[in-house]
Length: 144
Figure 1 (spheres, rainbow, N blue to C red):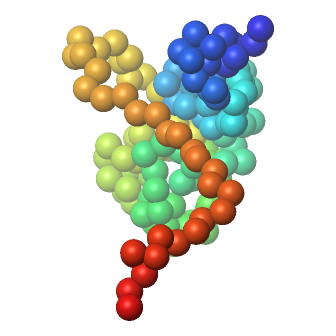
Figure 2: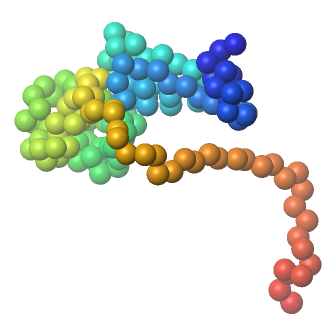
């Protein structure tokens, strides 16, 4: 039995995607590749080639704003393009010290965030999709 099936069965869920990586960033990217209902292991030796072609806004925590700033300054849209800029200082001048350093690390597959937490989980979410074959409007809801 594969890992997603084993997890889904034990939790009584129908679908589970499993991303495996050496750090939180790689696991998150692996999980995106595993969807829907699969598993993917993003090994550290394969991380750069995987990240290289990704658009900047596919990295967690980097949305439209960072992508637009980099595109406007250097006409770069991919993580590989950011990698080739070189020094972290170049990115920090455009994105700020913290964001520039974070992007510089992420395009290299580096995520040194501590994954341990002493705080209890505050929420758990699950999505359920329901298919309704035909929708018949309720006459009492139709305005007259």
